[in-house]
Length: 244
Image (cartoon, rainbow, N blue to C red):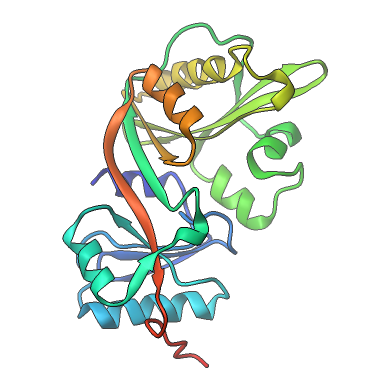
């Protein structure tokens, strides 16, 4: 399952399992690293499994959230237990997973570093000094830290993670004053060349439906939809805090 591959590119600070399900915690940094990935069999009746998700989340001070492949029997079963779409997480509550060839072409001055810089952290995590969770989630594994520097500062950044034969791309960002100069494409081309040198043969991305600009960029590079997933949260009365 490709979604399991993607999850390896986004490691949480802490995790547990309920059967095949992965329960993840990273101090609230990103839904991917703070939700239960409901793929496979939980090894127990679904109500008990969802109670376990609630216990794990409440015990760590985060909302109970389940990440589910869209239009599957698992999604239908979770909905039947009173869980609802996590629309408060809009525009990121529904995500398209795209696959495509490794980008290639001019890098427009972008380079891939072995270590993150303060400028890279500012663009990918929102500040030059990352939290413990941000540092762990974004810098664990075989990571390429893509940057393009202009006018004495970091104008754009991207994160590339190698997972098996895949390049997982995330956190592509260009400062507003430097947009429409081809920097995003240059960063993608640079990380694609780096990934090819690491043995990757294809690219995978998880892109929110509410991000049409990114979807257009990646589709222009030959990416196509593989599947979608959504986040679900308990509706009223569906997730009693059993730890209270």
